[in-house]
Structure formats: C-alpha cells, structure tokens
Amino acid sequence: MIFRRLVMRLAVPAAMSLAFVAAPAVVTAADEAPSAAAQPSRERARMNQRVFDSVWSEVRTQYYDPLLHGIDWNAARRTYRPQALAAPDDRALYLVLDQMLNLLDDDHAGAASPAVARRQDAQRTRRAAIGVTLRPDPEHPGDYRIESVRRGSPAEAAGVAEGWRLDIAQGGWSPEQDVIAGRTLNLTFVDDAEDRHVLSVTPAILEPQPAFVADRSRPGVVVLRVDGFDAGLGRWMGAELANLPPETGVVLDLRGNPGGRLMEADAVLSCFLPRDQVWATRTLRSGRQVDLSTGGGCGDLDQPVPNEVAVLVDSDSRSAAELTPAALQEARRAVVIGERTAGAVLISQDTRLPDGGRLTLSRSDFVTSGGVRLEKRGVTPDVEASLSREDRREGRDPALDTAIRSLSRETVLAGPDRSL
Image (tube, rainbow, N blue to C red):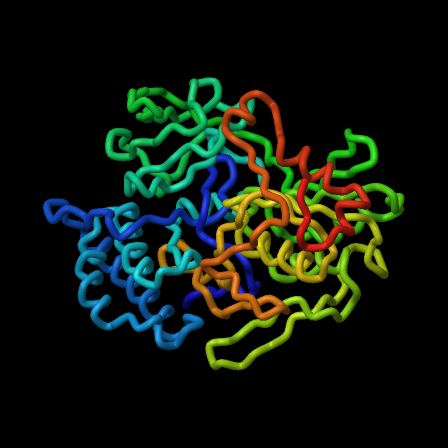
C-alpha cells in the first residue's frame, strides 16, 4: 500500500545536500536512458515496474492540472515504461522517472531515490555526510554543481571547492546511493577552468545544522535566517519576536530557502499581518478555489509585531520562500531586497513509492491575494542586491547590508518606488 504524506507543502525539487537534503534532485530530459547491455534481475525489473506504474498513475489522477498541460500521458507511458523496467539500478530508474516528469515543465514534479529520501528524512539529525550541497547542473545533465561546502566537514578537509562540478560518470558514486561513515568515496570534480580534481572524501558523522538562526550581533536589528519552512518555525519566530523593542528592525533572510510546510508559511505571515487577512488563493484540481488567510500561529503572540521588516531573497528562494515575501510586499508590510525569486510556487504533496523512494507532485495552483500567479514569474524585489561567490569567500554580505540600510523609517515609508 502506498503511504501518502498528508502535510501540504510549498516545496520544490532543488538543491540536495549530502549533509542535509533540501529536496529531490532534478534531472533533465537530456539524460541518457540506461544501457541495454546492463540487464536487471527479475526482482529488480518487478520493482521497477511497481515504482514506474505508481508514479505514472499518481500523475494521471492527482496532478493539479487534469489536462496535464496537454501532454499525452499514455504516449509518455509507452515511451518511458520499457526504459524504466530495463533500469539496472536506482540511478538509472530515477533518471527515467525524472525524464518523464520533466514533460510537465513543473519544478515541483520530481522523484527521489530511496537513498535521497532517507537523507531527506534525516535532514535535521546527526548522521553520516560529506558536507556539501549539490545542485543539478543543466549544462552537464546527470552531473551536479557544488553549491556550498560546510566548514569543518570532510569535503572541506579534502579540498572540495564551491562551484566545482561533480562528474558522476567518472566517480562511480552518485547521490542516488547512500553514504556510510568511514567508507571513502573517490570523487572526480571539474573546476571553472575545466581542470579535473580526483579527491578521496571520507564521510563522517556530522551534527545537524539548525533550520532557523537569530543573529543579534548588529545594533538595532535582528536577522532571522530561515533555511526551510520546517515544523516549529512559527513557534520559534514568535519567541524571537516576543518583547522585541518596536524600534528594532527585523530582517527575514530567506535566501536559498526551498520552501516547506504551508502552515508554517501562514504562521510567519501571522507574525506581521492581522489575523484573518487573505494572502493567497489556492485552486484545486477540481477547479474549486479556497482563500488562505492568516490564522495566527506565531508562537504565543496574540497580535502581529509593529517592527519594520525587510525580507532577503535570491534566485534560489522558492515556494513558501516566495509566497511569504510576496504577501508582505503586497500588504506593504515589508521591503523585499535581493534577486528575483525562482518562480516555483505551487502546493505539492509527497507520496512514498514502493521501493522507499519519494514522488513530489503539485496538487494545487496558487495566486497571491492581488491575483498574481508567481509560478514561472517569481517575486520582483523592491531593491536589487546580490551576493557573489567572491563575496562569500571574503566574508562580505552586501545584500544583507542593503537590507539593514532599508530599515530606516524614511525608506520603508517611501512606497513602492523605493530606491537606495
């Protein structure tokens, strides 16, 4: 029996971390099908069939658009099912599944192998990891870019650098496989100059990094860094905002945030907007529309705080990390600083697959209270600011500096044509 998670999410397949997995990896239709020379065992083929049929049927019956954007889903089954049944391992199977799901042109639609799903489930726990965050490389289908390297991790000790490409074909290991503490991985990386680096990285047990962090090191401002809309965010934010002097500015840093739980997005908005204020409309597969309004949930706070607010976003802010700044921006409650967001804003739901993998699929469409459909569009910041790879290496954060400057009373009250 397929186990279906009932928690609605505003999350997308995006970056995956080998210390912490943010979402399923996404591959493109250019990825090659499994080699005909590698024949799966009979048991493998049977499981491949069960997994493929589960994914295909779920899309046909549950996807938010019953017309599937005009795609002939029966033709997709005829094309991809033989390839899936012939897959000799998880990597080959999930490449085929994602090729089919990519026909939907939906960043939320993705399949995670059992190993990736296990890392997702252990995201905030103490576990074996090498300490990098990976993102699929569109220029080299099947490979991954190193988005970040955790300080003090095995990856940093081995010399892995941010921005390098992990060459899967040369490494013999892929993220569809588990990592085991003490079992060395021999990995091949390619740097910006196309030079190859063959490194041995030995996974170690790493402590989890917190999903939410409050930085009070700067006078007159508190920076609330949120890496994901995980369970407990509303309670945490309410505690951080409680008894905050009204003259203290709040920076809500959602850069690189892939989204998360719908109820936590509502809780965050309840920290700054009046109760029962409509902030979005959800459209179900049936066409029925449901307004979403703030319902409280910001910890023990019984009313929103009056403090000035700036929200930091970038091109990797997705789903709930887009709806939140959009709602605050439309309500003229916050100034949005940074880069245009990813434009990946649909309500998704996870389904457990027969082999322990996971399907993430969009179940509802979404528009803001102002009628704006953010999917494929994103949130346009009030003030543009960015953080380069060189800035990170040098310990600078000009985007955060811009957000803090924006919290002056004159700037926040200047209206929609703000400039710094």
